[in-house]
Length: 182
Image 1 (cartoon, rainbow, N blue to C red):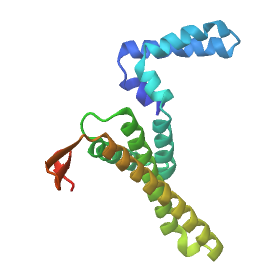
Image 2: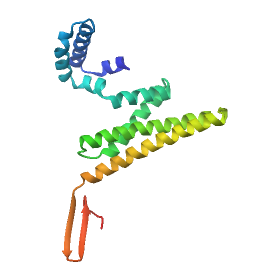
Image 3: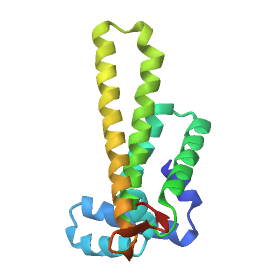
Image 4: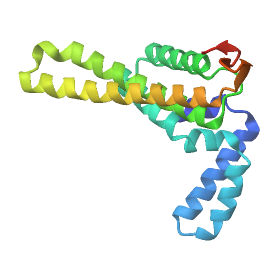
């Protein structure tokens, strides 16, 4: 995976990666004085920060690898599905908070469906106790997924501009993002 990523990066980024790896080796070898230089190199290389510093992406890659065990077609199709799902949810001009919550929804989606698949594939071979364990795991994952969706919906709703129009003392119209709500 890292090799594939490296090949896909522009030559100058590949040089930055080599520089960063050399700095990491120096630091791991005890030259902690190279740490400020490493931090500066990371700041100048957004691809490194995005690949190594984005825990949501790292978690997603790990889950996909675990779920498919090297089935490249299924892995890539799932990555495309997640990308389309994110783009559909995020919309235009999403805030950083919405983007974080969308990542959470995507990871929870993977977990829920993975547990559902594992249970469906194994349930005939499981004891009652093991079936209960899987079902509890599924329920917990589902609750986390629904909680992430609810939180995302609440945040997106709070971000929408609200317009209130008073037509008379007893008549008012509330609009959120151009849609009538009361």
